[in-house]
Amino acid sequence: MKPSSLALAAALAGLSLLATACGSDGSDDAQAGTGTAGNPVEITYWSWMPGTKEMAAEFNRTHRNIKVSFSEIPAGLNGGYDKLAKAVKAGNAPDVVNVEYQALPDLVTQGLLRDSSTEFAGPVEEYAPDSVRDLVTLGGKSWAAPYDVGPQTLYYRKDLFRRYGVQVPTTWEEFEAAARKVKTASKGKARILDFWGDDTAIWAGLAQQAGARWYGVSGDAWKVNIADPATKKVADYWKNLVRDDLVLNHKAWSPEATKAVTDSRAIALIGASWSAGGIKTTYPGQAGKWAEAPLPHWGTPATGAVGGSSFALTKDTKKAAAAAEFALWATTDKAAVSSRLAAGTSSGLPAAEELRATAKESFDASFFGGQDIYAVAGAEVPKIAAGWVWSPVHNSTTLTLQSEFGKVAKSGDFWAAFQAGQRAAEKAITDRGLKLAE
Image (cartoon, rainbow, N blue to C red):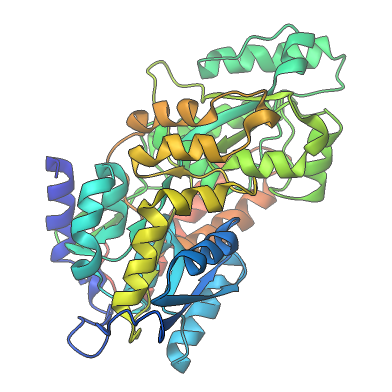
């Protein structure tokens, strides 16, 4: 483990942030075995992520001692995590659930997940890079098995970039120049990007790239630094682009945003390694016209991480051994990757580097003109800015940020939203009974 990882683990170990985390320590019957071919152990698995239903079916096809019962739930902040919390309280939670990295500390401090150090610590140490492993390790304990890593990248229409005489920008200065050129060359009909300025995940990646660290620890207290100079630099940059009408700024994932891309009024999108599957399924009529490139940077190649998910065991599972076997298969086995990506709806970049060749073979990249999108995204993983920590109140803070971003969509005064997010995060930490650094 690198020094930064050791420092983070040591700092988190003494924090009161884990005071309410009451996951099972495995001393009861949670270590139940994994059954036999004639009498398999049945485990329940909840997910909203594309390709996971097919992946669970592949596990059942190839395993006789464990049967996975899959249930689709709403995406995290759209109700999935609330559903999980209620299920744990009611005593009918699933055995395994997918958890996004940014949500993991929140679920841990609510006591919804099981300390799975016995099952996951060793394997995760072997296959996950430090930047990903840090995201599933809290208080020196392993809470989940990471599946993917999401370096932020740029997706763009090759044909329209050529039509408007625009080169793929490598810096944010070049990006602004390209944005002006697209607007002029298209006679105002197109913009280089639909920004999705209410998407907190996009902002977090952009801020991380610029050097921001929204959350951290100091002794036994949490630090909140959302309204920091690096974030202000990013907020001001995009304010200028919105003010000058150089980008569109629709609500993320909205019909208006989809139509802007469908109608070729927006010719690029900021996404992550997992975005390729969504772009492919959302815009099938644009097959062969899209490509992926590294995100423009501020002068030194770097990027942020957006999203990414893990497999966690829930607090009261009585089938930890079977649940862990499934979770580790899902995150480290070639067959798991192939079955999940073959449908073309998912394009996650495995955290395990040795699985990326399998991912490339499993995902039909003809939509991207045969481009090796896994090579593009994989090359960005080492450029993810180090030292990023998620807080136990980021879920609630995200809701505040999204609301505030919506209020300033037209003016582009994003900085006011970040200041509101700073206040909301500080209040949420103290309301949770956690200590806030002075």
